[in-house]
Length: 454
Image (cartoon, rainbow, N blue to C red; front, side):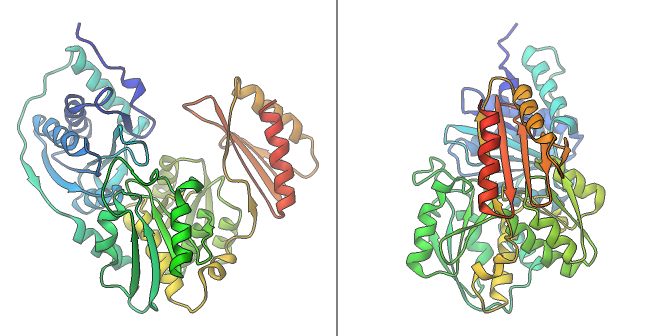
């Protein structure tokens, strides 16, 4: 029997990700393409890729696999992940994006979606795709056959035009904005999306380079926005924007060089969307700030709380018809964008909000940033359940607290909350704490960490 790669190592909850070519190579990508076409039953698919050296070959191989099942394939070439979602949504066909987001250069991966950018995860086709690939690797499955048609198409201009049709930037005042693309796909999309707007754009690391020579393209890690913070101050800019490797997440820095919490951005965008869609629903995960549901209610909307993870957000958006959803990780989801996440559209909302008034960004977001948060703190533990039980026992008897188990354990009182949730893939517990006062947050954080790390 031929050697069968261990797909359990690379097929994750929501995507495929592994080291190229040891775990993911062109042959395997071709099989994934065939299985994707088979499982989705697609007559046509769209495929895009990021700037990693291995990405073009993997994308072409995936397309060949789909062609072998009789599906037509459109290659859109270099694109951001949300540009791929745009192509899937506007063409109404399933799509595949070759990227490993902010992972190191030796990695690559596949993010897949059904027609209309609907997510593909373990429960929505990914497990079937994996099983089919494994059967072909063992030589026990039906051999792919059939020939589809391959076409190439550039969607960047259409993607930019569509985003700009959703946010009115025509009357904003001139702004100076520093943009750190981290050598990722923001360097490809930002010049086209922002062209012609009253913006003085100062580019940083726009050169597409999948080896990430300047810093890791993960703006949620504070060390990766240090360059942006310094440049905003040096330029006297109104704000800074940082995109991750595949440019589906966006992080914002104010005029003082301070990071703006993704919860504050979620609240800001929610207020803007509710102004256009009165009474609509807004989704937030359970570790975004309490300011988010507060702002949603204050603006006449209905907040809905979900577990952490894009599949849960997208599912709730589809179920409730929500107009917008936001996560602490700087993923922002829009009904007008097929419920998919797009950091670029969130960035346009920030530019429109700031440019539509005369104040500073720090003042604008201050009303949306009402609490002190710990940020996410990870701890390696030997026994997740035992440590979680210890936290529960220590907090459960306190007066005026509530406990819920939507995602890990959340303990909440009138002025603070603590969430501890286990990682699904690593022996970690993830702690998030928020309180009205910094001192209270710090005390609760240290107390919970002591229990977790005992």
